[in-house]
Length: 112
Length: 115
Image 1 (cartoon, helix red, strand yellow):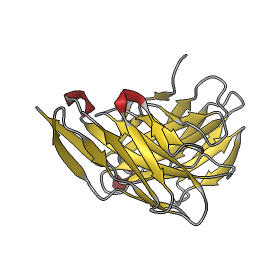
Image 2: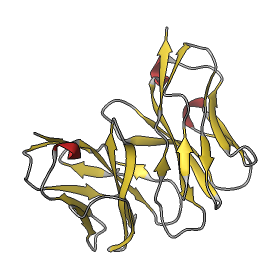
Image 3: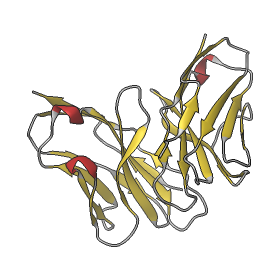
């Protein structure tokens, strides 16, 4: 079966702009989580959506937001980009119970 | 709150030698435990998980881990490594029984297998 698909794979944006990243989970999976990976902070949880509802949120500023659609696809948005937002953004999907999370290949965002 | 500590940032090892990657966690509640592997420019792939039951868990690619509740550890082992095992390994926990799949990750251990 198809895995988790994240688009785009690479993105270069200018400071102050906004960006939208997309994640298509595995078919049937209702839970989608987002993580930010940087060399300095490691892997940090951004937020989790289940059946279109945000059910958990990490410690990130309000510039980071997300949503989930009825087909379980999810998007995350970062507004007013800062240099420090440069990172690999990973999406993970799961069936919804504490179980194996399947990760996409990530979107590499570079802010210049 | 939960936290995960991976004390070794890098572990060099020769091919065909055994290896152990250490993971300790802290939590006031019961947790599920996971090991993930990340190859360069890739996402994370699950190696193995402990949800309940036997404390010795076997995963893919010949890896295994043992859950030790008294020592709050979940060390990853492989009896004989290959060059292809060179990657970054992450230990993670999630809250047992919680209505969330949120994972708390350790800082990762780079396994560098040398010929």
